[in-house]
Image (cartoon, rainbow, N blue to C red; front, top):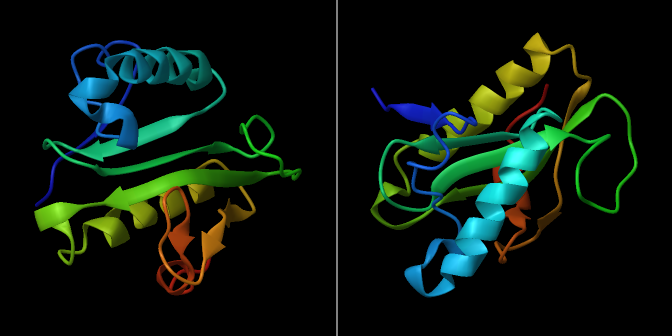
Length: 135
């Protein structure tokens, strides 16, 4: 069974942030990202990651407070869903997305949305992966 961690104000400083900016050469970016996440937790921001070193996480929040040029009501917006390296193909992306879907349902949301492209691109998910899921 995979073990996951949701970032909180209590654990964010000790957790690996596992994001594109998580490379040690981008330490200012990592620190800024952690500060941004801390400021967004009050808005319902969720950063859930596999308890492992790597880029294996989902990040989302209510669309009403999401930092994107999209308007909407009562949806969660997925900023990023990323499973990289040796963790690919093991169902982890599906588990992360299912968590977000169930979390959305428990919060009474109408659904989840994200931006996608035909093929995976940086900061955009692959359309065919998300088509498998419906709320």
